[in-house]
Image (cartoon, rainbow, N blue to C red; front, side):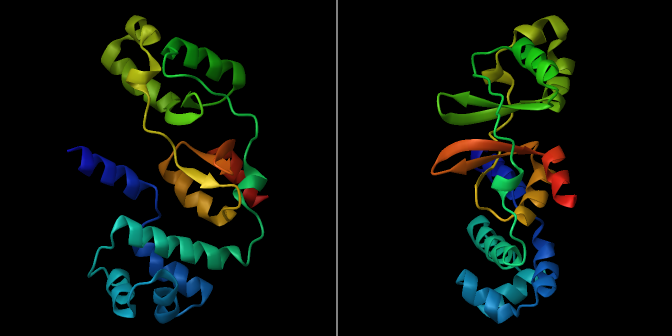
Amino acid sequence: MLISQLSVILNKLLPRIDSIKQIRQKIGITQKKLATMTGVSTSMINQIESGRSQPSYETAKKIFESLAKLEGESSSHTAGDFCSKDIVKLKPTNTLHDAIKKMHQSSISQIPIFDNADVVGVISEDGIVKHLADLGEAELKKAKLADTMDPAPPIVDFDTPANVLVPLIRYSKCILVSKKSKIVGIITASDTLKMME
């Protein structure tokens, strides 16, 4: 059960598999070159693109990273250019009331949850509304974040090409940015709009 839930979460962190061919053609590389870059056979790339084969998470990740690298060569912007360095954080022991108050004060719609230096989850307006229906307002405010938070958001490297961020933000409320294994920033949907400017 846990494995299948984890698989669903991991798959949400990647763009759609059926977009591989479109991205590859947009960049202008052959199936053979993509296969060489990702360490799989050309026939496997062909089968994935035609929908005859479903890649493992690791293979899909390698393919998208290779495509992003090639796309990134034409774009010099990185995750570090767009992230907000001022991260509002809460702990698993904080209550939902603390989260609601902090969201209003900071005009934000999601807050990552940290247990010391480790990211353990995220709480968002959507998540709070979802729990409101189950718990009721009085119980909701007392509920601990450890019991109500969503899984931790994806973490990307500071130098990740900006074009990789848009598909990720579609599936996650926020993306955390790390540099030398330390979380240094956060990217939300509104930050990705800066890329359009």
